[in-house]
Image 1: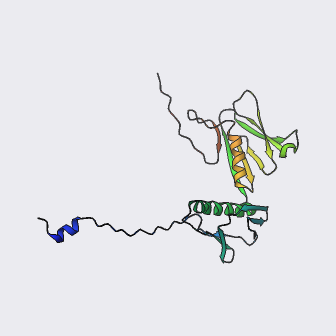
Image 2: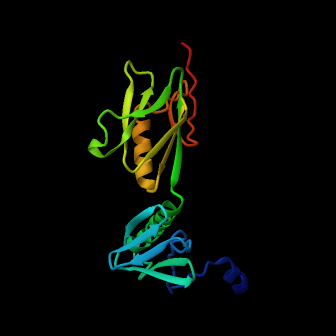
Image 3: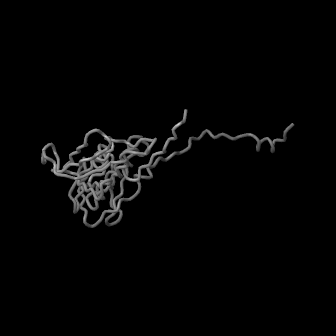
Length: 213
């Protein structure tokens, strides 16, 4: 027979009281530094950010709470962090506002590399000018096709070709910059056998070995 003292140690104890679980967004709670050159104007549905490079707006949900605990510091909170939608929008909204602040002060730059024999790019005037939302320039690329690839540059993008195998893109909107970079990459995505293609930034792929028959 097991003594009562030993029995109490071997048995697991369960509590009927519910545990209190507080959800929080680690991204959303991070304060956003606001440079002195940036002006922020809040309305019921959006947040306007003005800086040296222009202005943009970020949509705001009704449950978003903005505060300024210190000078040039912005914090974001939600009414009820236990609500899944509010918790997910908490971190997303913080990221969008931070990107807007960086975009209006410094902007975003991404390099694109052309890897392959004969792959090259050149920046030239677009014969169509600024029609269809272009800025009057286009990329003329050789990517292993039987024809040259021409990609008009949108008005919100600035492009530079410092070398035949490198393209540098600049934009104040990180999302639009990524979309245009992906549009260029789509013409020759990196392939895993010879490692050729269009690479964005520090993108890397794993080279596959060819099995010999």
